[in-house]
Length: 330
Image (tube, rainbow, N blue to C red):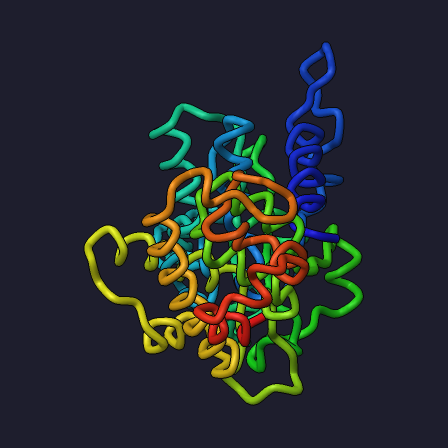
């Protein structure tokens, strides 16, 4: 399932889990509202779609990265209290409210929203001591003795072990209590998102020419060698800002976001060509920027720079001596 399909599935889940009958009863009983488990490679957009859905569906959202938590912060701290039983007084241990559950109540008070999503990220990377508490939350919607408020659903996310050496696999008993959604990267879906969020044109053009470079993350590569959708989007933000400030963006910056050297080097060279061609396009009149083949002006920088088919079939592109070095990139 791609990230767009997963977002729609989550939207329907939110509406189903918060729906009530005319008598005010939950249409899906609380004990049947399984947590949603999103499993996919890093940087694919798991956290982003939950933030978007919380805004679009007008529900609360509390996010926690579980690798930052200990058993004490998840379950609460022990306190000694006085108790009476069988006519005798004694002292017993209780736990304060979990930091996570307390954050949900704080969010409800802050926003006034009675329904929402508790999002537990990197859930399969927690420590051994915390895992029993996580399983209790997934199965019973409680941390210790404190329950998640009614109207709140649990969504969790993790990376399959092939992408994260510290990740563990869930057993059958756990998977039988969640709704697992496996995510795969999709360039076509990301391009829709990128067009709506003003991703840098050089990034979009490069990925049209090299779609295989969009997402590179597999076990065959050495550790630390990867490229993700998040990397491309963050690099785009850097390019736009550097251009506005007049800074040069070189191979050094590309390597900081694209952790496969050959891809970073290739994009840096492509970006230099893009800047040079945009500069040349600025010196030509609008009529001169028409594509020699399709006569298009839409997005045309120099003989329709983003249209590979036109460049290859355009006689002027193939023969102009000043474009000899540029042609080698295509």
